[in-house]
Picture 1 (cartoon, helix red, strand yellow):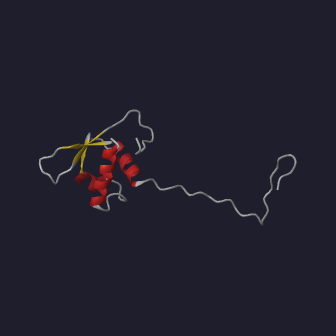
Picture 2 (cartoon, one colour):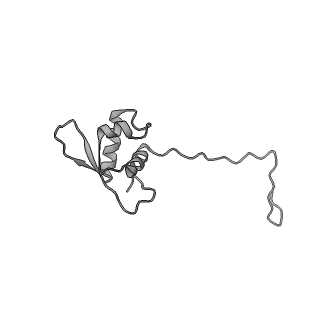
Picture 3 (tube, rainbow, N blue to C red):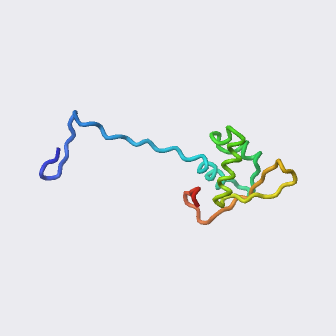
Length: 104
C-alpha cells in the first residue's frame, strides 16, 4: 500500500519477497579460476586429478572434458608428450584478468 508521500507499508497478508540464492559457478569456471592461481606455466592431467577443486576431480573423464572446453576457448594449449596417454597443457594467461570468464 502506498501513501501520497511515497511511503510503503507491508502487511502480514502480503507474500514475502523471494530471496535469490547465489548460483553455483560452472565447473569450467571453477577450473579456470584454479588455473589462474596455478604458479607453473604448464599443468598435466595427473596434477589436475590431484590438485584441482574436489568437485571437479571426482571423475577423471570429467577433468579431461573440462580441460578440452577451456582449450576450445583458448585458456589452455595442448603440448605434445612422449606417450600418447599423457596429457599436458600450457596455461594461457591473459592480462589483465579480473574475474575471468570461460566465454573468453
